[in-house]
Image 1 (cartoon, rainbow, N blue to C red):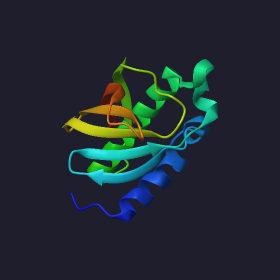
Image 2: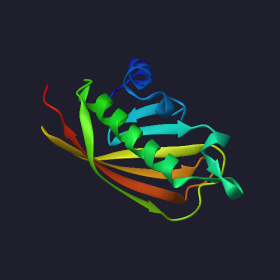
Image 3: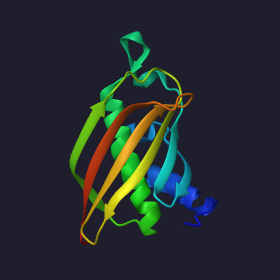
Image 4: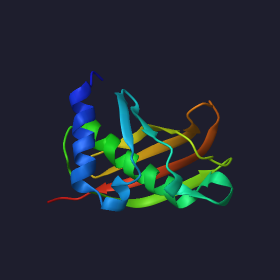
Length: 141
């Protein structure tokens, strides 16, 4: 798709400008914008773990929703406001404390609606730990 570092810098700035402070504290790092979507890294964060060193599902759901929005912002090359209208999350295996990779695939991106699929992996493993499908409605302003 030919995105460069300015796209990544724009996503970092948008994350700081448009999202609630607690979402910013997830420390989501955009790594690369690719033809099918985008790649993100979530650094180890003890604030996201529960007993047993497992990253809590609520945090993963918030990360999924956020990286879906950021991916659409990058691909649309605009900061159009959107809202989540549906989200389904599946947990296949525990996501343990440590770096988490999130890959976002854009499934559809229309004039009024968009759908993304997010896959979470431990940074050191090819196995999917959790996935989410998020649908968004674009808000006319």
